[in-house]
Length: 317
Image (cartoon, rainbow, N blue to C red; front, side, top):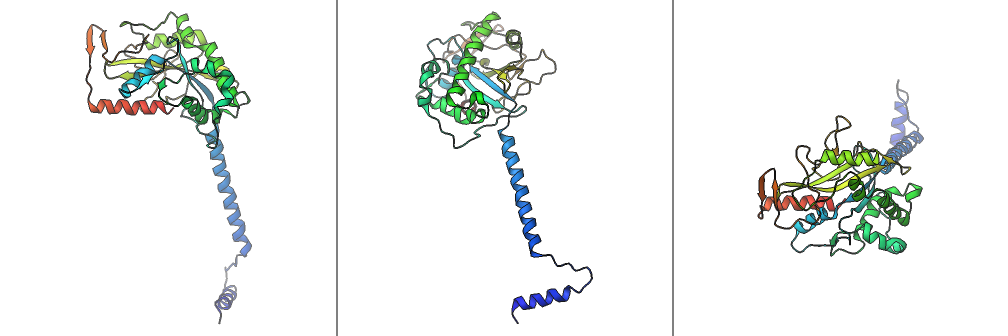
């Protein structure tokens, strides 16, 4: 007797038993198809969720602090500072979901075509400057566009290279932190004059009318904290909005929790002042802070390692 015949006899015999139900073969296919469709919908919804964002963070960097990080990472590193090194430069335009980091790399097949930026390239070189001399000329722009511009493209105002980078230049002319801070009588200094981050944060807020975010880096050599970046936020309609709810993109850096409106959104220390340097600090940094001399030309291998890791985390934003 063939196996198929035996199976049919067995099924026919059991079909007479109470409670036995013979499932039509088509039901299995229906269940399989439904499962596949449901799984696809879940995956698609998650993909769409990863593409969504609430605000756009516009980040400006202070070149002298960025250069400090770059030169300390290696003795071979040299900085390319903009002609006017007293002006802030653009770091990026980052679509961001509140309470988290990203999204990023929303279209991994996206291509970057530097020739499309020819009409605004001279201005980009001045205001969206890549501080790290020795890298490819377009590395910073390519990185920012593929990582963040690929997500910003869902907005008609930012759906091309020219629009994305052009908007950065427009915002830089409108909200350059050099002018915003100067309006509050805050200027970079060459001496030991330090700034209270809360005062600085409130000064920016008074000019913009919205809550900014301030980013610092800690320098183990001097024990000081340097002003590095200032972030302001926009809605999807490109209108200024509060940065409440955004997170610091630097690993191990968190913004201090705000309990009332006077609390700054920052990773800078609230219990001591910060440095806003008018020039790149020298390798041998000596400061008179609170009447105590801080001088350190030697650092342990562990400190050097931690600085390198911190810089690499910042570099890949």
